[in-house]
Length: 142
Image (tube, rainbow, N blue to C red; front, side, top):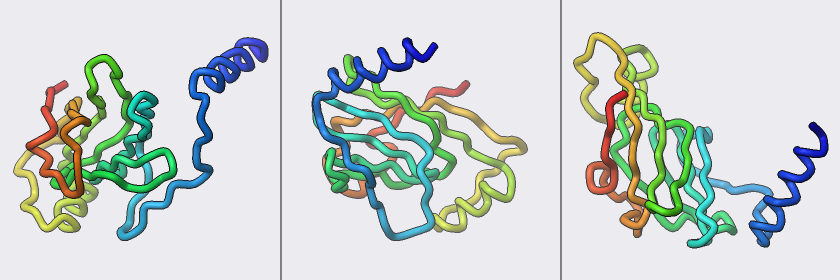
């Protein structure tokens, strides 16, 4: 098992051939990271923070963001061939969901239960700050 983990770490280190920042600071608000995906070819990372999505360079500088995520954006994976990030999105019908709606200043959902989606994010359209959610995201119910 140790040999497999060591080999995987070596392959990852050789494949990346870059130095990554030890810390990426995104300030302003009560955010905590939910998911991170690396886009090695474009030299950037994508980060989800519950109700926020950020694009950063490999030094941690924010180069783009998506607004209007009225739910819990979670774990992510990057599809390099399709140039999309796929993330879990839960729109909650509970106290957390009400808190997200209140924080974002939007109307609460009128649902009797939580809804789950795969959010397909077109990262090439995240070209600046505060790109509207509906311009870059397609939702796929699960």
